[in-house]
Image (spheres, rainbow, N blue to C red):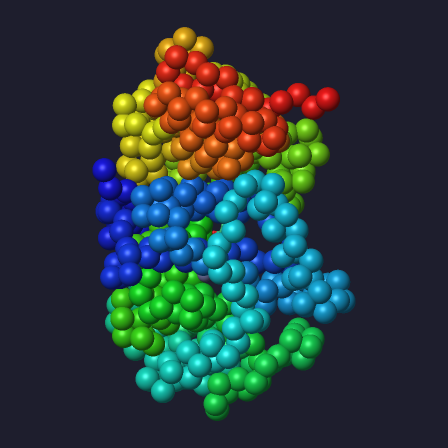
Amino acid sequence: MAIRLFDSLTRQIRELKPSQPDGVFRMYCCGPTVYGPAHIGNFRTFLVQDVLRRLLELEFGADKVKHVRNLTDVDDRTIAQAKREQRPLAEITKHWTEVFHADCRALNLLPPQVEPTATGHIAEQVEMISELLAKGLAYVAPDGSVYYRIAAFPSYGALSRIKERELKVTVATADDDHKDDASDFALWKAYKPDEDGEVKWPGPRGAAAGRPGWHIECSAMSRKHLGDTIDLHSGGEDLLFPHHENEIAQSEGCTGHLFSHHWYHCKFLLVDGAKMSKSLGNLYTLDDLTAKGFSPMAIRYALLSGHPRKQLNFTLESLGAAEKAIGTLDRLLERLMYKFGHFPRASPSNRFAGVLTALRDDLNIPAALGTLFSAIASFDPESESTDADFAAFEQILKVFGFNLRIALRADRVIPENVVALAEKRWAAKKVKDFKAADALRAELTAAGWSMLDGKDGYKLEPLKKA
Ligand code: AMP
Ligand code: ZN
């Protein structure tokens, strides 16, 4: 069964597949703005994208998914923070990038293959703006800023279905006096000494020195690292308009090619039923929650537990339930590892088959978790589980990215060379080559493992250290 996912542009559930002959699935996710700690709402979106990536890797192969997620390290918010703290912009963004990476590791998010920064791609952004100027899709305003002329891009609004009149109301800002049309957006912002401090670069030809507008970074970095056309572009629901609408105008206006085959937006995380905000005191970071004693895996579970296309209401009680659910998974893994010991063999007939099917069906995470827990409740792992159940269970844990305590225990992770020796010995025993089997047992002992032979299989156990 193919992986199908809602597409925000066509508003249909469509199959996800690589569009290019190399078979690589290209996905771009808008990343964090690194001027403070990411909050758990940001992580909801990044976690949903992580599960999607893991599912795609299972489908197409781990080396056939290319995931790019940027770091916004120059924009209005980062510059304002540098000004507030009276510190260089790069110092602030470096610090918060490190914090972000530490949070990602704790939450077991796979690092993207490329994590480009806006400041590391000024030349690419200037180049793209120059191309848009040359095509008449952009113009230099009297103050030396550059704006996108949306009247020159007829399909503007296709993603958000925003109407022209609404557009003018929505986007009216203080910069209006420089624009030809209120709905045009900035590609390049002329330097303002009072606001921008040290932050400026030479602009496109004919424009003032300054810095890129926010939207252009994703168009330029996506093009550089994934090519003109990608397979999936994703972000939180707030990015659909204007950010992604503007990215389409920039990218397609510039290259003349389709920008992305698929668009996916994760709905917001609410806290106690309300939008998260510092002033309401309901904004949580990962640190806030671990300081209360919750484990990062339970936080991962709680943030993933709703349907990504529905808003999710986060409460501390939901973390308590997540902690229990992770405990259940942990105990099952421990029992299966104890029972089977070796690396399990996959087989289509297992008790968990419906779980991945639910994920493939528009990333229906609640249905997948529901199926998982009813399957767990329906059998006795001690007497009824099979090797194939174990294999399927491990695969599910991997796709959900649940790194469990039992799996982390060093003595439970069986090195691959030990498994290879055990497999060889088992094969030797089956053909009654006991000499070879004994020699292999000696090798296993030397490696610190004992092999217990059963009727239909074997179990590996670490030798007790003297
Ligand atoms: P930002 O750091 O603000 O650029 O946001 C990083 C990512 O988090 C973007 O994909 C946003 O759409 C997403 N995001 C922001 N707030 C929330 C929220 N409350 N729930 C889910 N995703 C969010
Ligand atoms: Zn973006």
